[in-house]
Image (cartoon, rainbow, N blue to C red; front, side, top):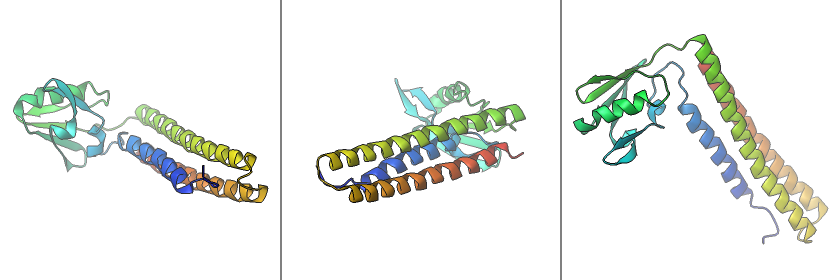
Length: 186
């Protein structure tokens, strides 16, 4: 066991939680078309489930329209069904090998619901960051208990870990507030 905690590893793990939050936020609908909206959708084709981006090309031809150019025409029906069943509230329109998806205006109730979901995602990210902090602090305590470091060194490392935690949680909060504004602005 090393005499000191690995701050780079702690930071990597905290930033991993932050990146997961950003991915979850990308999938939240804000009333504007974005290809990230369709990323979580998987389609049952060829006897397996595949991500949508491996079955066709997703484009954003207009601010409120997504288009998917399906590479194999026989998969178009499965793609349409997967989008309808995704729970995103989207209504795809088949046009040969192209599927058009108009993005409807969000009503006030749906905006509030999406803001609440965004808050839940942000809280999960904060908890994940705090769990990484706790792991680092426990390692510090073990090092001090095993006489690998003194009280002063323990305090210095604890302060650095707390500073890192505060910085990452600040990034989580800033990203959440930006997403909340994006969702609630009319």
